[in-house]
Image (cartoon, rainbow, N blue to C red; front, top):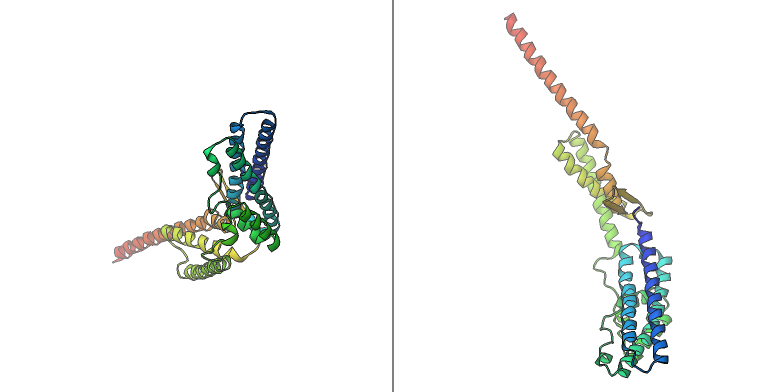
Length: 278
């Protein structure tokens, strides 16, 4: 059974919880080793760095992926995940300080290389800035500044080359215009050829998908084991693959062909009869 988009989001959150648990375990092991052992515990520290990076990076990627899955359309979900992002960001200053102190203690040159890049974790920062209060966002930002951590996401919000409102208007306008065009063509050419039918079906499917862009609700279509579509794409799939007009068109075309052949035969027969009378 293929997972739905909502299940994809839930599975990703479960994976995030699993990575957090592994990260916390590695920290506990490092602290326990540091308390009991006299050596530098470099291997345990590297484990902390590795598991921490996996945890933070997965959360960062999940912010972008969850938007593609449509999760950001739910304000309730977005608010909850923004709060999760805030907790993750709040844990980062202590994480990087632990690494810097540990590598310095081990006399390792890696102490100067553990700081993240200038645009690191920008997605989570934007999420917090957008959905949490300004005071909460500024509080995390100030902690990052004091810890010399990047704040690119707090200062630079995501740019939309085309707003969702404009996308919806253009999609709906395109859909309505071409639906009207197809209605006009259906009266001009009521019995299209097979090639014309294929073209009309494709255009109508695209137009229908665009026309439903403004309608609320969600639809998901599964076509065998190789296609799963939702939203406007699902409407396109329904109109393209489940259009019942093709059998009728074939029947009408066959009927016309048979009628034409019959008419042609009768005409020849009539001519031969007339000719014999002459």
